[in-house]
Length: 485
Ligand code: ADP
Ligand code: ASP
Ligand code: MG
Picture 1 (cartoon, protein in one colour):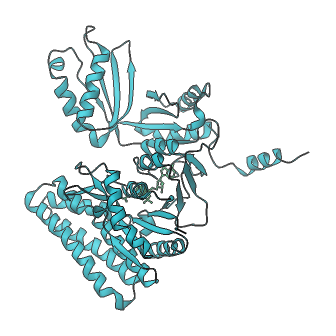
Picture 2 (cartoon, rainbow, N blue to C red):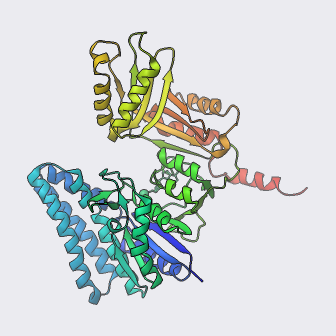
Picture 3 (spheres, protein in one colour):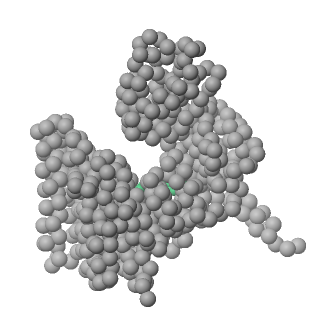
């Protein structure tokens, strides 16, 4: 009988210390008893940020900061190696870690000379943290008696050449998975794969965007036709809002692919926004679990709705910018202006998070990620150069002080009066609503407010919709309702 194929992904905090790595190795060993396990790992927490800091120091000509960062990164991993591996096994692992770090140092010092950070070199260097953590986890497993092998995501995931946010080709990745992973699985060897990275057809290194190890795991689960994907993280699962905003955020036991995708897309950091697409297509169920408390059931993501009415979760995103465009001359067609602005955004290859329009004033606005604003503006000003120069269009207005929040739930469809309740709850806190949008799927209502008001607005909706953990008295009252009199 063939064993089920389980892809498991460990996030940064779940491999962030020697203790966490050891716990992860224990979880992998336990699952490998029953399934063919494929493991994807992130870098140890904070390491990718440290690597980016080192590259920035390099391109700014700051040699001492670069060398200091390199030392810090090395020390962190050497400490983990010394804590986790018996002395007899360390020598060869340290040699391999030094090889990985030397390669990073070579690229970063190259930037010192160039005084720039070519995206192609950044993508070669950025997955260094994943290379180091995958090596360590694989060695810890071997010490525990579980055969395992380090595999680079670049040898599996085939992508386009969009550095820093590449798109995978699943069919070609499936061929690599079949030739490279299936033989390991049939010999009972657990592959430990670097998350976050891939390579083009020509073998040029790429990355899948920050937080992209979730996406790596989803791509590989889809490519392998896995039975399930488990994402181990540092919270119990998907919560009704960011636990950093509301202490009474409640665990959602079941969410649909659409709900999870909307939440991730609108800022729930627990999942990379692109994770769900490859999985939904193949209906591969996902479980999000807490590696610090593995017995908890976590969140299950599948195609079946939980059947709960109304809003299920609220999410927020701070790093966004609102771009407003307004015709100055009534002869300008608002629809054409909007079409051209969207074309400019498409040329800049950026995601428009929200679009809202006032037909009366021939005015519309679009919300984009802060990281994309320069390239959108460049393309917009190019597209509308003549109209701007001759005053047919007002100067483009750019507001950096906004934030986005979104209320999400399959059960919001056709719930009358819901939008009004959300707006009233926000207004009660004296928070000004700048723009709103609701997709035709009615799964999400997105609202733009001032960034400074984001937390207040999220808490207000969370409370209004009764999404928090029930207090003792309301839990007792609910339990009481179920008792026959
Ligand atoms: P990992 O390193 O495991 O990939 P991340 O830090 O990327 O973990 O994502 C997990 C974090 O996402 C949580 O610690 C939590 O702070 C944050 N988060 C934001 N919104 C939510 C939400 N709605 N549900 C759960 N976690 C959330
Ligand atoms: N290490 C990468 C990052 O920090 C990818 C990930 O953790 O998912 O962005
Ligand atoms: Mg993450």
